[in-house]
Length: 385
Length: 248
Image (cartoon, rainbow over all chains, first blue to last red):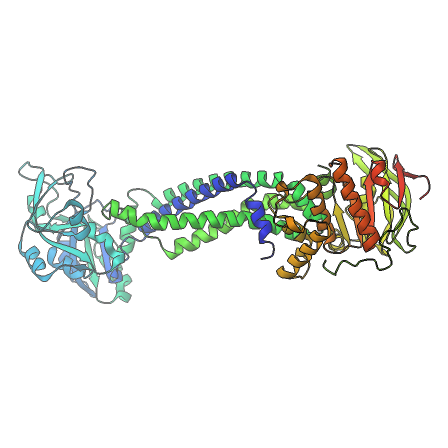
């Protein structure tokens, strides 16, 4: 504590330079939070209580359809409680930039298997009995100002209609919400009847995109998954059964290796930050060589001079880094609101901890070269100027 | 001061200049040589120096540029080590100390005054004076009190909160002297302390140094090339081409 005035004296010697350095650190760590939030969001989409849910897709690709007839055969496997199925519809509402997930599902089973999807009983009833019915998440409804009773036209991008048309019209019969805040992501979805789509589409009739299998006992999941894949081994449509979480990860990987992309950008950001602040630190210490020589002359041991320089670098990183984290903390909800929940990125404790570790690590990295220089400093030469 | 700056009880208020120095030796140099490598060439800066400085002395080291005055001062102050010979201060061979031990020794026993003051520009006068006390076990209040006493001694009590940039050259040098004094060192080494000052300010600084010697019994070594500055010392030794010339 008694060395604090010396620390501040070093930092405030060139206020403008320190401020600019701080701002660059703030910017870097704000970006870090955003990118890390993207990484987390993509790596753990909807980490639902669905450890008792398995997803069955084609062994070769998740865009390869599976026969509808598999449903009853999967249902017959011991340990399977319920089987639902779905297809990725990929419809566009008005404009391609209005993207949101929309899927055709086996309504009865899908709602039974997904208790996290909260829909009033009357709306559930309406959804079950309306062939052209659709339900949407609360966030999605708010985004487009939809209300129950609206007709929602979607332009097909994968499944044109048998009658030559390309517009599918759905009747909005329900608006659901997630039962936990961390599952808000599902509120951006639109669901409608598989039967309506399957009968009306031009191709791939009688097939599904994937099956969702609810098992009796989560501890039995591995055995059930193996049993399903064995059942269809060496058939024309071999299957790959995995946990829901793994499935979502592989789904996201279609876009690309998000983790790698994000890590690469973060790496570039921090590499630039290290170069920039490292150079600034070297320059700042170079300017203060006579002052540091005086400290050593009056008896300051090498250890304390070295720690002062290191502390200076770490304080800059901590001040700027925490500023960046707090700025991001304030910005993320604003972004979520501005994009109607489309960009609802999480700021987790792990991001804060990783950020803190990075601040200290980068502080050490940029502080060490000038600190070591002070160790080698020859007092007699430095005083001579 | 860290241990309380002791006023010399034996010193009369107006001691005549060039009075006889006390006899107890504080500094004892024997057979000192110092050489540097400049490129591939070895340059001998000091050769075969023998010098005794008694406790309570005020000695001026004079000589032309390059004569080795500052090198000799650095050796006595433990900033540099001799190529040959021994440096004993208060009976301790400092030429045998490690760099860490030398730093601790300097902190405890030596006060430095430089030509260009070498104050930290972002710190107030008081904080600058407190710097050597950071290495002691004194708490913040004690450090502040000692710094204020030192500033009072140099006549700058009213400027404690000023930064060096807000002080004149003479005032900055007085802050530097307060910093050198604050830990009550046994030896004050002053390297051209008036070299950057006008004649009036220089005279004030020299009188202050003289007072520290006479009233407080401080041992001072003053490196200067100014004969008028040297006149304030009790005695003068001349260096020429790395050797002491004449009698002490």
